[in-house]
Image (tube, rainbow, N blue to C red; front, side, top):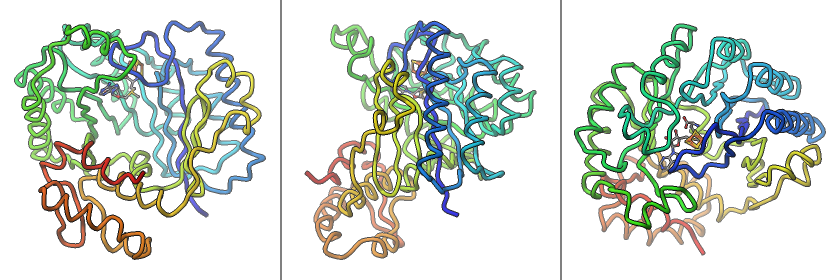
Length: 380
Ligand SMILES: C[S@@+](CC[C@H](N)C(=O)[O-])C[C@H]1O[C@@H](n2cnc3c(N)ncnc32)[C@H](O)[C@@H]1O
Ligand code: SF4
C-alpha cells in the first residue's frame, strides 16, 4: 500500500512572537478553540468519502502551538485520525510543544496516542533576547518542560534555535548552542532570523530599531554551528536541520523528496497525486465549512512535469547531499533537463554548485546564497 504523511495544523498561540508570521492567532478564547477542534474533526471525517487509500507513514501536528490544546482535545482529534486512516506502527509521530505549555496529563495523552517525537522551540537561552523576541517563557521554564518530557520517556526531541538575532554576538550564540548540545537532543533546527512582512520585527526594522549582526557574523554563526554539530555526531542534512544517526526528521524529509502528504486544518498544504492544494486561511469560514472539502481546499498547482522538475531541484538542493543525477535522468526526459543545463553550468562556474560522484550539491558559497541559487531553478 502506498504511504503518505499527515500534517495537522493548530493555529493558536498564547501570544504572537514578534518575528513570527506562521498562521496562528493569539489571545483566543476556549470557545473558539473548541469550535476549531470540532471543525478539524469534521474535515478529517470528510476524508472518508475521498477514498484516500494511502497508509500514514508520519504524522506531524504543528502550529501555532499544538500544546495549547487540552489533553481531551488532542485525544479527540487523534481518535478520529486513527478511525479514518491506517497508521504504520513504526511511523514517526511528532508534535510541536511550546515551553511551559505542557503538563504530565498532556504528555501522557501524547504517548498514549503514539507520539514518539517532540519538537520544542527554545530560540535562545538568553533571558533578554527571549524578551526581545516576544517569547512568553524563560530558560528555566524550557528546561522544566524538556526534563519532564524526558522523564516521561520521550526519546526523540528536537529543539529549535534561532541566530542572527538583535544584539546577539557570535560568542553568545556559541554559548547558547553549547548549552543546548549538553542536553543531548536527538535533533536541532537552527534558523537564521528572517524579517517577515507584517510582523512586529518588520516595523521595528523599518524604524531602524533592530540592531542585527552583520552578514559576515551571521554566516560565521551558521558555519560555527555546522562544524560544532558535525563534530558532535549530528548530520547536517538540510539547510537548517541537524540529526543524530537515525533521527533525521522523516516527516520533513518527505516534503523535500516529493512524497505525498495530506494537510488538514486551517491553511494546511497538501501534495497528492502530484497536485498541490492549500486549505483556506480564514478561520471563521473554515469553522463553518470544513465538512465540505470542496469549499475549503483549493487546488494551487497541477502536477505537470515542468513543475515537478522545478521542485525536484528546488527541494532537493535544500538537502546537504543534493540531487542525485541518476534519479534525475530516470524521472525526467532529456528535452526537459536541457532547459536546466545552462543554469547548472553557470552556477558551477560561479562556485555555487558542485557536481561530484553522481550528485549535484550546493557548495559553501552556494549555501550562503541559497535563496538566490534556488530561485534560479524556478521557470517563469
Ligand atoms: C512553526 S514555528 C513553531 C514552534 C513553536 N510554536 C514554538 O514557537 O516553540 C517553528 C520554528 O520556526 C522558527 N521561526 C519562526 N519564525 C521565524 C523567522 N521569522 N525567522 C526564522 N525562524 C523562524 C522558530 O525557531 C520556531 O520555533
Ligand atoms: S514562534 Fe511559535 S509560539 Fe511564537 S508565534 Fe510563532 S508559532 Fe506561535
